[in-house]
Length: 58
Image (tube, rainbow, N blue to C red; front, side):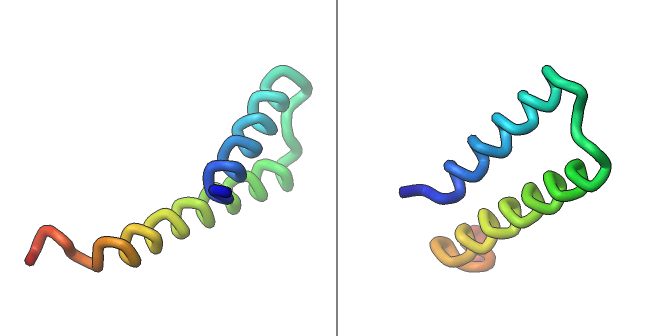
């Protein structure tokens, strides 16, 4: 089970639904931005965990 992929897919569905409808409120837009930022951070931490901080420097 890949939680990152599941969360990203669900976020994409929410954004697509909002584009078809009346859109998201400002609070909802901020929450989407927050979720994207957290997913980005988790992706970078995963890279560091698997490859080290600077794998090209070795």
